[in-house]
Image 1 (cartoon, rainbow, N blue to C red):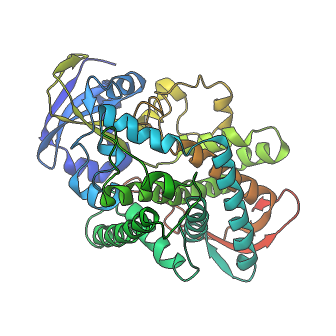
Image 2: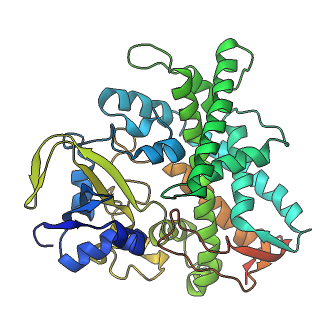
Image 3: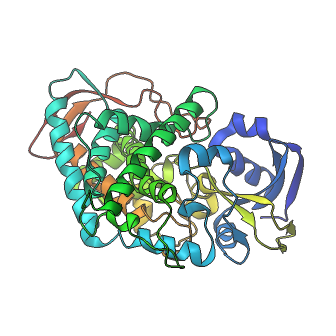
Length: 420
């Protein structure tokens, strides 16, 4: 790639028009991995590709404090959570989350989720049509709340699912979707704050390894309990992202439908489920970019990085970089047989080190739940995908099939099945 290019004109309309592919298009057009533009009138540095990711996740060069737009904090992330911390404060808080990601705990979540899939399938057999995204959001909400030690009555499930879904759907949204996300965030934080109070008062006694207990009793580097609001935000930072895996599960079902060759390889045993899931994560849009602020002045590839300047790392575009993936617009799970395992060239949920950096702590949860869903869709169910609008718009954040993926004729089966 060539030296940096600057685009002094505002690119907000171009971002709205091109969506997830905006940074990728600019990088390919100008043959550069870094350029400066303006979004909503403010200067922004844009980075793309594996080497750019290595720079972006260097804690000496970038920080997260104050980087996330206020709109995202009030809907998707919450204020005071781990995403906005740096240095020792971040390492301590991230360590709290990583303590929940043990193999035993991941197996427990997978087991609980499988039970929810079976319970849902019984219900689906009695329905003419199933909107997969909606149904998976609810079953994941039930599973993760139980896993996290969060009490949830059957009557509460629809409201909590709706609030988590609204927070997720508010990412990058304006108008009603944004305000639904803010309402869902406020209501969920009040609910989670009440749970924190109950644990600390001894009125609620979740398992010692549960997320609710670990977060409620976590102490910061100064030895202090997290304030109630921050603890509530962090509880939601376990529950909400797990419910968001429903988007990836829906894309998994879409890939089974739209990529018959890959599906045949999988069902015949020639393809690995792990590779199929990883290709879903690479191919389909999830988060468009990560955001940070320049920590100190430096220069990279001829582009000056000024302290305090906001920077975007192209997640979607890096996962579709032709230099890395050859034929990025083709769904080909077999490419992961030869993947080198880099923490910087495959970054659907961020890059770098899980324990020390800002890569998503729940990435292993995502992969585990997607593999479980893939097994269930191919081995436990038969169904058809009726005519519907399955287009995935790259200008909608978060992206999803327009129809939310409708299934019909769902039946439980005892052997390899899958949709037609």
